[in-house]
Length: 243
Ligand SMILES: Nc1ncnc2c1ncn2[C@@H]1O[C@H](COP(=O)(O)OP(=O)(O)OP(=O)(O)O)[C@@H](O)[C@H]1O
Image 1 (cartoon, rainbow, N blue to C red):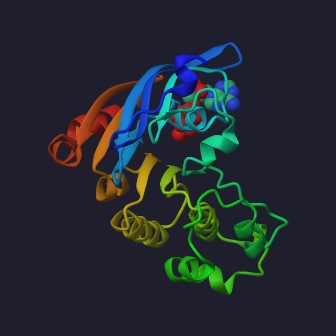
Image 2 (cartoon, rainbow, N blue to C red):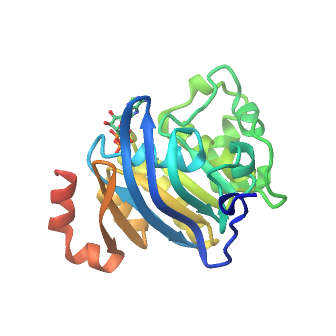
Image 3 (cartoon, protein in one colour):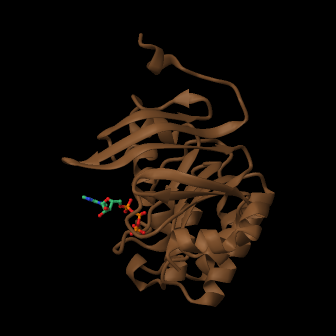
């Protein structure tokens, strides 16, 4: 067996990405991305449109398979694992489009993905965290507001037992009051020990949650900030984001 297939390292990192390259067809989009997430941490990937943030998430979970480099999840090298095995390591991905099935009800959408760990959220825990979903249980996916779809998408991965969440722009297109609700829910999950990798355009939202931030530009990580240094260097970060 190759060294890659058998690598398992015990440390406090839930994610260790090293020299990640990825392609869409001939188009080389990620050029050696390096970063990590420790257990219980909330880490953001910030950057301008087209910088490569969503592509980084897709390459990590194996939805984009034309890739090279190393992605250790919970110490296990995943580059040669099928997506099903990657999910089994306890990683839950919420894509930018939220992936809600329009012709299935809220309950059917919730129950669709298989449980990957025994200690996923029960329906009761889901309704405690997302009370709106209880009232909408029999509504079809296409009848939900953007905020309800985002909550359903998050609830669905929590039910699977995933403890490490990859969230692609969870606040995109949502009203400020809903953004605040989603921020509160993510804070609760953080207090419960969930690790999160968050792609965000909304720096204020990212700042309210994250322990650390990475700046992605042209398919590379070009800078990194702790929460404290991000407070001091807001002007520099805004320049990176072009805002
Ligand atoms: N399916 C695809 N096929 C070809 N090129 C793509 C595809 N998806 C994204 N790209 C290109 O890859 C590059 C990185 O895109 P990516 O979506 O990762 O950026 P991003 O940082 O997430 O920004 P955004 O917020 O705009 O999605 C961009 O140049 C984009 O045009």
